[in-house]
Image 1 (tube, helix red, strand yellow):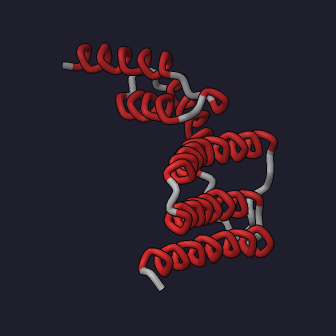
Image 2: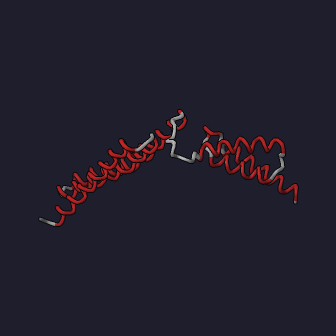
Image 3: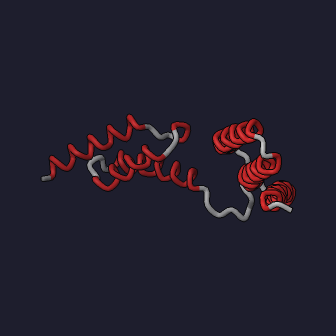
Amino acid sequence: MPIHDIFSIFLIILGTLFVVISAIGMIRLPDFYLRMSAITKAATLGLALLLIGLSIHFNNLELSIKSFIIITLVFLTSPVGAHAIARAAYKQGTSFWEGAIVDELQAMADRKKQLEKQLKKSPDDIEIISELAELYKKLPTAQGGSLKKAKMMEEKLRNVIRGTI
């Protein structure tokens, strides 16, 4: 048996294994976000390995080009699509698995609200202004983030520093 046949069989079996692992993850994982992670990562890699294995097996330039195009498109669209779907689910309030211990986005949004209240009480506090500017940069618009607000906070920070020096 030629070496390229052995290598193609190996890639096809490995790709199939990743697709099976992805399917098991869809069944066994406890929440939407973990399932989405399983399907996005394992199935994408599995598909790529399968197509590479088939391209090697058939040794056809046309099939290889088509496989390369498919792999490229899947690698480009799969993470973007998964991110968009997960973000929509998060906005809709899809709950996390009870074992998930951190919701960083919600923690940042809560911290932003807390800092905005503190800023009203002490408008010249350098630490509050700088932390709030960083949160405005990190948070998406839907959670109160804004580059315009961040720039305003940074300008206010410069003014406060100039006034204290």
